[in-house]
Image (tube, rainbow, N blue to C red; front, side, top):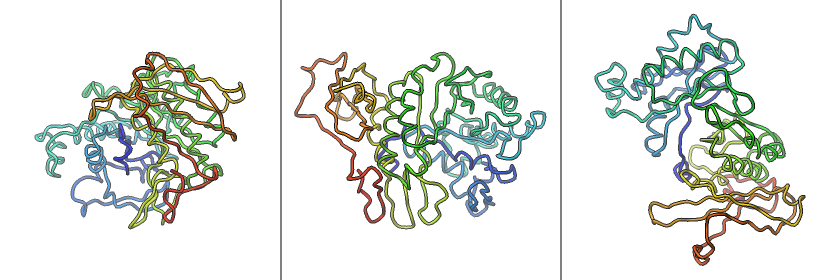
Length: 381
């Protein structure tokens, strides 16, 4: 199901999971590599479950490689939900991260590259992005600790793109970064209203990485059509600002139906079956956006009121397999009535469009709060 989305990247091993409620229970990559039976595991005290770390740092890198996508490693920067390591004591944490990068990228005769090779992967992984913490910007010592990590990584691996937890969409950062992380969890109306969130953000400085977004609360249930519509509108807004927003990902990706700790999630599974929520299927509309070219477009509707409830985008996509080029138009109607709209695109002649080759995909259901389930996995599709 993940491969079907054609993801451009995989962010792992998580967000709050990386931090821990207390530092003693933060994710430690060294304890998650090597023979499975020798991994000590740890208690994930944010989500209150024990993990054997069978899916560890190595497996995250391997999964990204298997999917043909870019790995983004989120590492602990000496900050948990309740504790922060002072900058004068952060040195061992910095070395730990450098060792982690060496595990991913180092030659087989390096200390940690040799461990990777022993695990059956002598070739280096293509690790090009790391995130310094998760939602830690306003916590004690974050900025000063961040600079220690930033300087050490750039000195040894200048090509690695470093992601800051601090939001630069409204005001400039006070520290260097290649990208900044942006998270949003809110209700459906708010997320739809945020479709213009990046319209007026500065184009100078780091690019944006929307690494966590979702509709939550009563609007989402365990994954509703209503939530997916608002999320689609938000993603179209991101697509219209793709000169600034480099990457975006829904979160969380998975949930075990027998042990739910968060709602909603994209993919629900148990020991023998799985299904995608409407938010999962919504993302299929965007899987051709990677590498596509945004085309200027304007939309006309019956009234300004009608325009306030819709958002559209148009991209030009080259299919490498078929050699064909496609015009992909996406539209979300967040209102409660049907609309007739006209969309004008710039730069494509009508004579170049082959009507007989066109397809229409519609995501809908009989009710906006409809959800998928094991018994009806495609009620909303």
